[in-house]
Image (cartoon, rainbow, N blue to C red; front, side, top):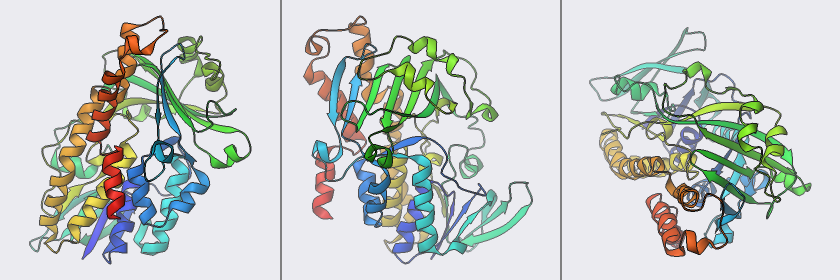
Length: 417
């Protein structure tokens, strides 16, 4: 069996390595001609770390990433609502890693080239179209960055791991249109600064209309007594047209956000100083897409952001793409024809990820922030009087169970590993 994966991001490369380890031939084609250590930070939940550990990548991750200790939810005055213990510190079988997206991308790319063979991880080949032949196999056509033909590939199945602007997805759902904008604009940056709280703490402060998220992402900086702080500043701009795609990831101006966060010096974290300290700031609209009725069409299916793009709430995007890879492997090694296997994969993963997309639209665990802002906008002296522990636990527990990131589910997986 030969599998073609369109897209060499986190989900695509993880899937490729999982399939190759099972003896399946895999070719990955990525549109970007030169993958570099660019971008900002992301989080890998313990369930994703479990899968990457199974690929023998734990030590490499641990050398560069931060083992997240806790996720601190705070109001806009810096008062702690909840410090949710994470990873090993929270009793999970694996760590949660906070890591620079670009460093993770390069790590996965190098590992995939070593395991698949460099010729089977092909950069600068953008999928343009595909068709399924009478024999059920899929032929795909590619172009280079200038639009010139870049050859074809034929395989037993095509996995569209080509992101939120997926060619595979738009082929089957041409009327879907642009992603759906939440009305929130995100400004993102990376700042070298001083450690705060535990030195391994992730923070979400504020509420839906105005929020600041930050976490350290560099083990090397931490070992030197510093912190490389990945941060995101969210502002709700209201209903309006989605910014043009060519405006995504454009350079941002700190003066666009500093006035809104000017008073957010919590003592333990100086938000304006973190924003001012960034070498570069970029703007992104917070977008997702509606869950699809189906991912699979014969021997073609979707994975990761192509299948289930979601708001970056709950730190779940990359993790869910990695979890897709495990379900895909299980289906494709079940002994049934490729088209039937892909349907089984879809049956397992589509409902789970659709629930997360919808939950994130309701702000996921960040609902705690909204409730505290609504009930105690000037701050509080007793969080229990504002948001009782039982109500808080229901919000946190429901989300974790829906995303399969609760301790009980992961402990059961650990026992079977």
